[in-house]
Image (tube, rainbow, N blue to C red; front, side, top):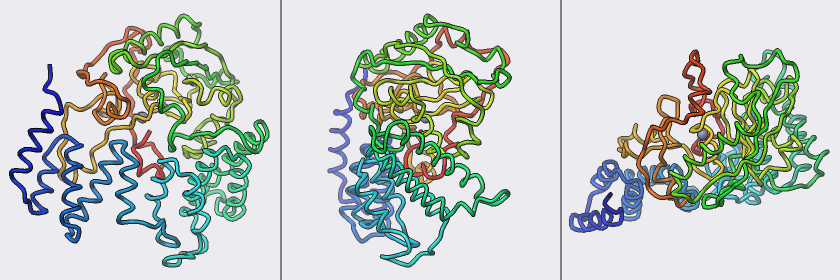
Length: 450
Ligand SMILES: [Zn+2]
């Protein structure tokens, strides 16, 4: 039994009223020490509203926006952020945080309009005509907004124009060689999409935009399909002990789905479950889907996965797990949008796959480091499948912020053991930190990483 949260809130509200009025500093101290995030936000909001001219209040307002973003409350975050930053800016002062929030809240047309009006400092302080990194970030935002509107040909044209301007900056050995290489691959993938699906097709969501699966948290029997990615050249495979499922048929994968369902039955209170819907094999050429072909850019690999025809067909209709048996995929676990999950065979573990599936439902990592550095305290017991412990996921449970998003009940945090995971784990397997959020590209800074 637990005390109900509403009773806590009432008690807190009573003490809050009896002690006011506060100074800004007292508000801030209270916000930092209170462990319930929603209460922190209320206190900071009250501080910002009560002392609009105070410098501490302004900082509190920024921190409140960070808390809103970190707890998946993007609409409120956007509303609050715009009070102090109404314009997307231009030239040297482009507000990427605002642009990313617009993208994250599905305001694609607004993103495209804002970016079209931007370069060369038509408003605000003038910026340089050419700025490689600025224009690459703008290009990535634009491509994501266009794909979310199903505009494949326009996305391909945008990338083509960008390459006309910047291709020459990617000469061998230069600082931007990898970036240019990646954008060239992006252009190729978009051309494939246009050729196979037409200039306009179904909306594609690339994990940084509101996802097509986000309304499925209370849906039973969501289909899940597995694709084994096997190198076309057998020499490029992971070593034999690390190949869970490599030579297995449907039964093996059904057992894994049963494990996933045991976990989800617990954390969702019986509201969400999966249904095994097949296992297939895809042979993959060298140069497709690897760090060299994406240049480390998440967007390029996310778009590539969407272009594989059987995956394009399933995108947004089911969970699709790409189980990668190639050496270069070692340690990889990434959510690509629209239910597509890229998983290295040696990361094929129940908790890891649950984590990626939760991304599809809209759950985000729990990361308080930046706010803790500013003196904020958080409840150490509030952790679960979206919290990393030294780069690994160990706890079956769900954070309050994700529970609120998915409408799932509060459950105790446990350290489970799944039988099939034990079989899969080779004795020589070392702990990796490949799942740690550090590998996420720089443009994802604002949004809790996936
Ligand atoms: Zn993640």
